[in-house]
Amino acid sequence: MPDNAALFLDFDGTLAEFANRPDAVVVAPGLADLLASLQAKLDGALAILSGRTLDELDNFLAPLSFPAAGNHGRDLRWSDGSVEPADIPDISLELERAEDFAASRPGVLVEKKAGAFALHYREAPHHEDAVRDFMQSLADIRDDMALMPNKMLFELKDAHSNKGAALHAHMERQPFVVRTPVFIGDDANDEPGIEAAQNAGGIGIKVGPGDSAARHRLDDVSAVHLWLRSAL
Image: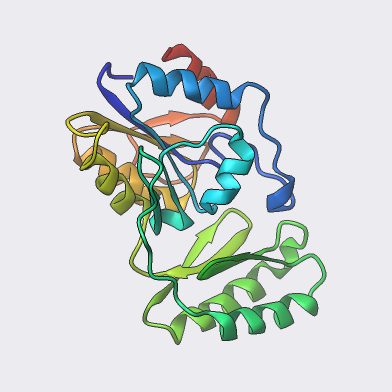
C-alpha cells in the first residue's frame, strides 16, 4: 500500500463474511482495532463505503466510528463526524409491495433502509429469478431509483449515488486530499469505487472471483485481513 494512501473499504464480503441474514453477520475479533491502527498510520485517511446504513456500520465496529458512506454512497459522514444531508426518496408503496411479495415466498427476506430496501434470497435461492424480475419491475417505474444486484440479493436504491462518487467526495476533504486512493470491494456495487480509485491514479482491489475492472485481487475476507495487517 502506498505510504500516502487513502484507504476505502467495503464491509460485507470484504471486511466481514456474509451470513444468511444481514443482521447475523459476525465481525472477526480485533477487526475494529486493526482498522483503528490503520487509520492512525494513515493520519485518519480511512473510510468505510458500504451498502449498509451508517448506524449498522457503527454497531458492527463499535465502539469506533469511521468516516463512511452508507446506502451505497448516498449517506456521507466526514472525518469530523458530521453527516451530509441526503434526499431520501419515498418508497413506501414499493416497500409495501415487496413485503407482500416476500410474505408469500418463505426464505425471501426484506431488508429495510431509509429510502431503499433489499430482497435477500440466500435462504431460498430457487426464488432468484422471481426476485430479480419483481425488483426490476419496481425499478422500471421509478426514474429516480435503480436496481442494484448483489450477492444473493437485489436492492432498490436511489439512482444517483454510488461508491465512486462517495470516494471522490471524500478525496476532496481532509484528511484524504492529495493522497493515493486504494479501494477494496467484492461485488458489482463496488466497481464504481474500484474504477474511481484507479482513474485517480490509485489502486483497485477485487475480493474473490468474478469480472472486475480491478487490476489486483485478494482471494477472500481472510486474505483482506492479512493484507491490512501487512500494511501496518
